[in-house]
Image (cartoon, rainbow, N blue to C red):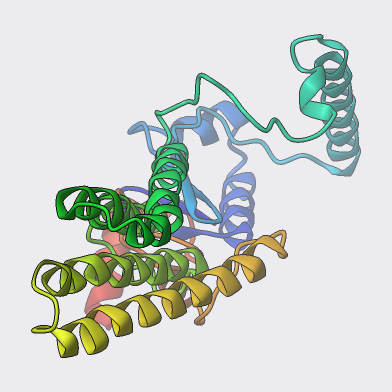
Length: 295
């Protein structure tokens, strides 16, 4: 999908065809066409899945069939040469032999990598109380030790789980408070977010029973135990959605028009773009005003 940044109009292949036909009939040269189209440094948004690339082209050119075939052949040859060069490079050979399972220098400029690192650390911390609560109980460990090793070490990683779910939703929607209800990735983050809250509430609500046994049974049973139950259910739903997402090569839309995410600099959804009627790319602002009057 290509959208004019200034006018917010969808630029379809039909728009390009109308544009070229109009200017070919006027016998304008290629240079004159490009000067007319890009006289104000026109910018375009190219939408690819859930990502948007903003470009400022300097030239449009329509290829005939022979030129198109030759161009495709050159692109394929360049891609093959680049691929062979990368494979032959010792630095990149490991990339073609399988996954790279570990690195000491993760690229923390990407929020997805930060999320994976936070989740990894939080999971390790969460494993400690899961492994220590039974032997500490059997050994009748002191209360301060029990509070730290069993409860505090559940609270800290649960906060990490909550962050990862929230950051995953932000990664998909393009905003910390944005919504992308049509993207399955946003729902995965949402259910992980709720699951993190369930795991956080368990140690918080069970702690009074640990400090003052026998006086907070209902809170421990219906608050703490039930919280970890529904938290686990939400994590289970997120896991099912992740399996569905990973098994598909292309972004999945849950609702009509959902494209997998939002962007910071465009407010148009795929639904809006589908409803947009193709217009001649050579139309000026005056044509837009006339269209508004007709409406």
